[in-house]
Length: 110
Image (cartoon, rainbow, N blue to C red; front, top):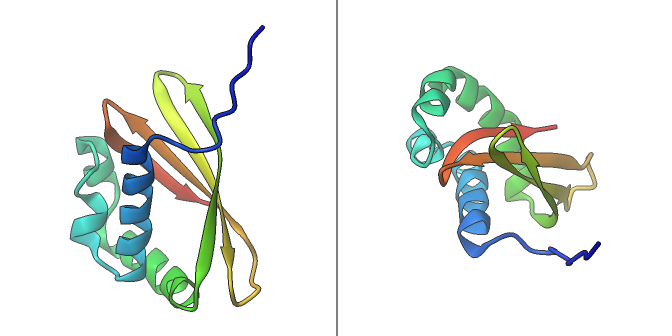
């Protein structure tokens, strides 16, 4: 069995992730859902987005770093994981980006 290190996602995937994080930091719902598939756009209301953004934006604005962890293939989706660490020393977050046909199908922060 041959294993190849995949320590970085494709450039387009990294750009999508960065755009999502920036949209959260700026509380920009339109930008956040712009790369989503119809189910993602329909499932994420502006109210839910605003609630998450209000909690996360202050931490993002103080500074953070992101480290790509891995890519998974799950049920026809490409799933990418990052670790977000915050300069304020608060708890880390695992960000999970799910893509299908180059569209965002899900984005979770745990």
